[in-house]
Image 1 (spheres, rainbow, N blue to C red):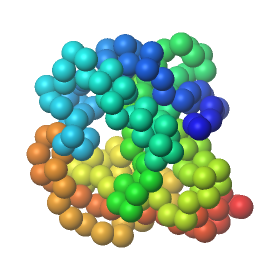
Image 2 (image 1 turned 60 degrees about the horizontal axis):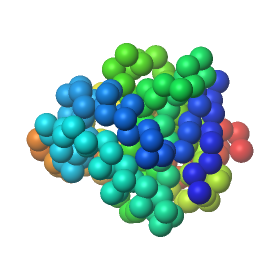
Image 3 (image 1 turned 30 degrees about the vertical axis):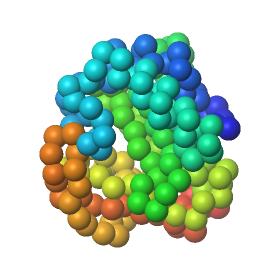
Amino acid sequence: MTPNLETSRLLLRPLGLADAEQVQLIFPQWEIVRYLTKQVPWPYPADGALAYHRDFALPAIERGDEWHWTLRLKTDPERIIGSIALMKGERQNRGFWLGLPWQKQGLMTEACEVVTDYWFNGLHCKVLRAPKAIANTGSRRISEKSGMRIVDRNVKEYVSGCFPTEIWEITAKEWNARRGG
């Protein structure tokens, strides 16, 4: 079960099928999707968010393989501004996107902090890995701020093509030491 989480400015609510309508309005922007995994269809179909929620995200949540949240400002709790997810697996454990009007305000850094803490101290996982295109400087900055380090480099396919990729990682021990736990 995906819990409600919050930060000083954000409410993180478990993803629901009814969220697809709002997501469809803000997600299909080239600046948002270009460094997401190639599985994201582009051009994004008119029912893309509904199909993703219904056919992929919600079944993964039901299986206990993934945890997905919508991001909402506390000052406007009915409006979805982005999404963040945790996934079981060896290669990638966290992914996120944020609508363009809300970028570069530190909001995703806040969301990553609370979600990463849940990964380690709620789910009791030992390591968190997040691959990202080297060209995705905003996402790389978030990893740097959260104490992650680069553990590997390779090439990965994204919506916008193949790019050099860094694998960022942090262990539970490193995370909790950084947070004074």
